Image (cartoon, rainbow, N blue to C red; front, side, top):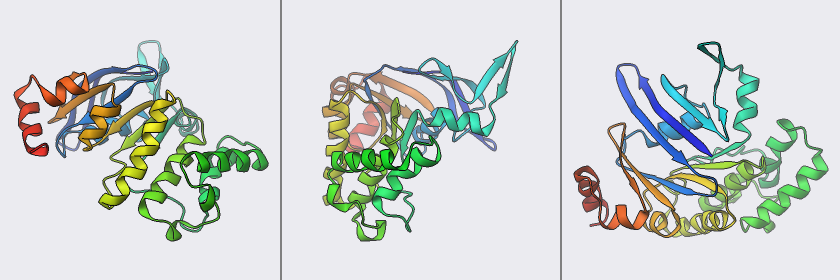
Length: 251
């Protein structure tokens, strides 16, 4: 579903990604773990071209992301072409990024009606189904300011699902939530995993990674340090850098 080869990204003189290569299979839940500043979120943003890579190549469902090849050269796609690609890659951020002046339902149907030109009546019907799927059927007419952080994040998930993406990217989706609200968001993500959705999750929720993840990728200092079965990586990591990180977060 996702193929990354030697992905490199720098901000100024700081090389944030130093040649990341990995594959994510269809239906897989891949969890990206690692300390802050390791490049996890940047890599996630590269997958849907929110960040332009400086080197390497990325494909989603066999389609090169952000660029097209012409002869021996790569040319960056125009913005409307990139927008079409992004419609297949849903993304949920740390902050909910909802439109504050629109209801939960209006937030969910924005993408289908504006980007995909779906008839409004169809979008509303599908939007209500998605809100029900994330446990918010009774909040369709509520504005973000009337919802808890966990509820806002679930609306954000429904909004991403509304575009019918092939893969969902989650960038620490529970980090901005009060502890008692984390569970309701993770429950929605578990149900997505159970439905077969391909998911790439940047998270510090080790229990979620172990329970729901199919594979864990541990990153540090812009490099992929260790990958494997979640139980193996989290309980018996091979690499000293992984061991040092887990000894702190699991202590």
